Image 1 (tube, protein in one colour):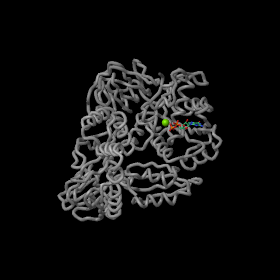
Image 2 (cartoon, rainbow, N blue to C red; image 1 turned 90 degrees about the vertical axis):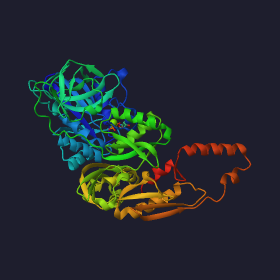
Image 3 (cartoon, rainbow, N blue to C red; image 1 turned 60 degrees about the vertical axis):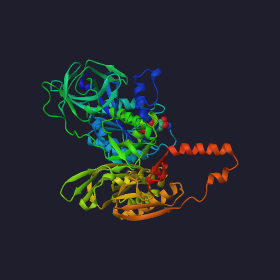
Image 4 (cartoon, rainbow, N blue to C red; image 1 turned 180 degrees about the vertical axis):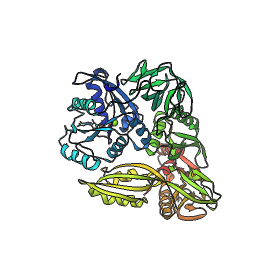
Length: 597
Ligand code: GDP
Ligand code: MG
């Protein structure tokens, strides 16, 4: 296709503002998909994405559109991952297109992810068309929201398109705006090939499918191409586009978005942001900004039933095949037996993988406390990256520790602001900015990531009745007074419960932890001390008193069948217990004990 008749765009929005529904309408109204094949949320393919309303992989669709001016255009929509965990993937997808539709729910207004995503679009030099969605609803207030877009984001919203993605109002205007207001891509057909690797995923039949945006040159079936990050060479055996089903074509030229396959076995061999060129007469310089994403949150995953370890290994191997940013290695824990230490891009990524293992592979898991990556500086001048609190070296040989910090943006109705500020303060936050837009406040905080990985988001939702929106980005590492807190049950350390904490907060955390465990661990026939300690020093202690009598005998003495049922239940329950020395700890205790507050 001739460059001037291509438009590449993405849709940026806060979750639930109607991105997927709008994409559906654009696809449907252009007859890209026959009505009988149309289903809702066409681009959100994975079940878990659909259920949670999030997109994890970039998805793309090529739409043929004949505009009011009579010309035929190719519109390429890239649906970007909608969550902070995948910020790097979002930034790559954004670099693959020239413009964005900024969708804002006209009954709600600008939210934290609206901001985060639109800033990504602005960073990528996009032209932006504001779209006010859900105008069919009585609460819709386009004037107010347009004004808010101008105030908060600083882009002109006078020409904002008023849309109902539900009823179809404004869809034609949106298509015309894409053609008339967004720029055509640039690129040179005769220059050496430069294709940006936007995303990749594993397909059981074709191997790895690589989504590319051609910047310069032409990619053809049969070409030998090279990944510029590592020099590996592949033979291209298929080229195509998504409509949104795969459709093979002969070549992709500058400005176009499509896929290639090249008998690549693992997603790991394809890195988002990499530049693909020809093996011979290739480009000399790669596209700028290649910076593969690194796991930032680590935790242990252990099977509840230790007999399922091999099944877990199998599940993890399979999931990793399709997810280059998920890392794992075997781990043994004195408390939990064999499992894996896994690295994730963020908490949502962790949850998604954990859910998939439990659901798709039917393995019940114990998840240990999520930990961020600390930089540990040793007295002898060396440095290590600490992924697991259990590996923390003895304090006597440690000089100091650094922890990752984030810049968090929170948007919240005024009435909840006090609670939000208190929450941030409690989590060692430093206020960077506080501004107002209408009846909403925007608080910007510098926070330690480790204070956010536990349950910050849950707490935020609960203190604001769900009205706050939250977004963050990593900003770097900073030194602080951090120590490892261990938990001992009946004098035995429970490695799965050890965690890194700030020294000033260690006692409060320790106390909360032992109090919680006291409630969570069932009584035994003997007294059980529960302690939190830093190094050899106990900082909090509770004692679980011994069970007095045989409760079963007393309550159910007469009824044999009930007693049998009870014992069966106990036996099933036993499987979910873990033994620590002589003490049984129920699996729920781990999960609950690790939730703060
Ligand atoms: P996304 O998270 O941005 O992809 O949002 P979705 O497209 O999944 O939409 C979120 C919810 O809003 C869904 O229940 C949609 O049916 C609904 N929705 C989307 N657009 C409209 C609209 O124009 N009007 C109304 N009334 N509901 C809409
Ligand atoms: Mg969606």
